[in-house]
Length: 105
Image (cartoon, rainbow, N blue to C red; front, side, top):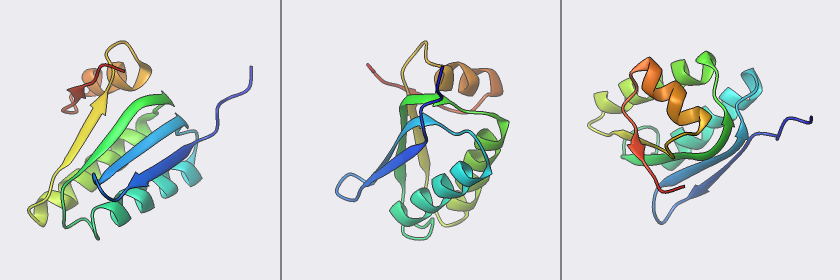
């Protein structure tokens, strides 16, 4: 079975970064970091990260999200993470204690 490739789309109107596919490796994590940094205007404005359609989110991805959230909070901004219940991303986020807003999918 072929792994779905990582992709992120930034909606500047809603300041939402939507992830599809999986965060499979370091390059994907770098791209995710860039997308979040861009959407949040250098980590200074709050944004939403939509992981509803993310297929895979390893510890490297979780660590990146936590680091970005911490750095954003230093600027008075926040990173809201959204995932659908029952998805891999939602389960991983819940197990690791990352705050997540549940979506309808």
